[in-house]
Image (cartoon, rainbow, N blue to C red; front, side, top):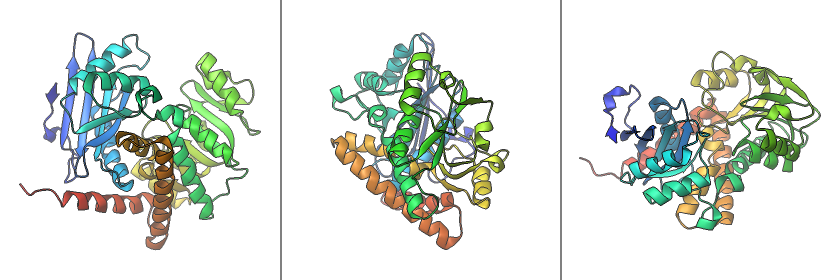
Length: 370
């Protein structure tokens, strides 16, 4: 395990990162990264992303997003993130994850959680090797994030606040989701419970679009059987990123970073972007969406349900307590940034950033001056 020098990163600032660690174990082919961004509020918490192209820069950006997210949620945790550079379907997945858990055992100021490519089983392996993690299975006393759908639940609460603000009504609203995994699937269900209709789903194999509505249960069964959304028997296929052009009420990016940028934000056809993924919209993309009158609810406000659930689990709370806190926190934060952005005439992300930065700075003020 080796620590990188901070001068390798041109985005270091007063908030962090505090520590950037790379993990390399050639015997099993492990390449990993841990970024502890800011621990002023407490030990950092954030997911382990497993993807073949995950990079130090991506993990640093995600860790900073966790700093803002945990501060907005008023958790007793700072922001951290980790990455394992491998295909999550690799044959030696368990060996890689277990070795990573052993390698980070001494990084006690980082608490792992699930992220893209990892789940409650992976968290059980991490805890077995490293002694700590959240998002565990119920058999281990945890609150599994994929089963509970906590992040998707939080997105639905943010959508309710958008309805409350007069942006769009949920009853009869159309929804397009990019990424139909542990965030996208429950988001579809929770939005459907509130009267919305899923009309488009994008995943690794492409996009299926049916303006009459996609049967969520049938789609899930199809994906479980075939591994892809495009095997769904109805609707039509959409190629490339043409799903961005669809005229829908809600678009939920729930996959990788930087899906919406300066080059394509002018094409986005929705009224509300519910940011289910972390950093799915670039700063320039946010500006274009704002200028076009599209409400873009920032990731570290809208998708905080998963990390709130993890923090409640870590403190010994129940699933009911977690969902109550998710609802209260996301409802309050979404209202607050909508009101502040309206009063200041600024972007929703700018309003959220001003609140998050103030809270992190307040926590940092309690540190001993060296």
